[in-house]
Image 1: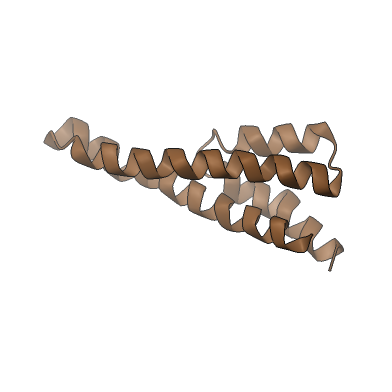
Image 2: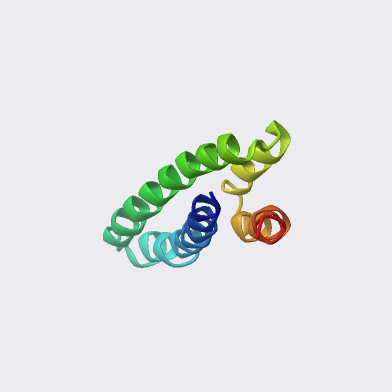
Length: 100
């Protein structure tokens, strides 16, 4: 069971980094330098990571019987820049340490 939480932590990190790259690098390149191809590449990668994050979040929710507030909070965190890093520190890492 710990494995799915470790995967969630990894996906949270990757999804968070891809979101920051999309907002901080790809979008400025698109609008300031007329290079939309970076948004297509990074946007696709971010979209795939986001979907994997949400699916794995639901798996962890069911396996560990998380309350709905924590699960919704972790979902909302994925919509905010740096949010998945906060969710990892506040919920994922703490919960993983409790269950080891």
